[in-house]
Image (cartoon, rainbow, N blue to C red):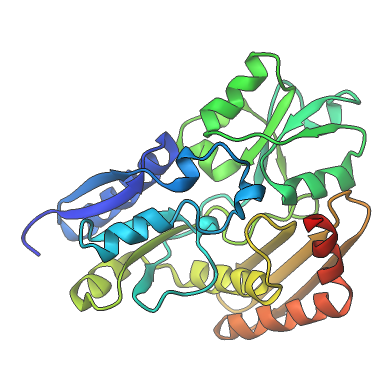
Length: 303
């Protein structure tokens, strides 16, 4: 690999910033030059809301196409955008150490201090369901666009606040505008939130070995459990499902919830076990949730 490696990324500020972070980490570790290649995905050009698009894969497929066509060597995604169903042609070679998993409120005041009837923007049914459980007196407005566009709607007077992933705001240097951070007792994050995913072709043994140096085992066990829950529930990334795993080096602690879109009902379960059993833990927790009616709550959201 004497030439610079080509890293495929979505063109948004957030995507290119996080891809550059990954590229710089590889260069620092290995000394190898990496060149960013911007790719426009269906999710970037469509005007439909993510829930209408089905969410899963709309930001990913174009990057994977470029991999398969040999136009890029590897790709970086936000892990929560990745479909849970594996593609045998493509290897998830590295999950770098996870950044902040929490959801954040951008606005003039904390969530508890927003006046009744305040308009809060979010493109996520998960956030809407969980926020309604906390504050049913607020109006939740579906929005699209990159983080800068969404935040701009506050200054324009269209919204009173927006909810975004804290990790993304940190990556684009907008943490000063965060008015509140939600703990997992308030908003469980989307499975994989705050984590990045590095993919390359499965048959590129040289690249698989090279790229795996950034893989963080604790992040991998935690998000594997979270994504196993999502897959076992047969829920896409637009479903009102939250999950969070924490591998402390000895034990993997796992919590997940499905919340009705009106916020009035929820199935929430927790478990713990060996990090080596991440998939089994996720499957067992999902089975318990289904036994308690999680599928009914997700079904109500889809109608």
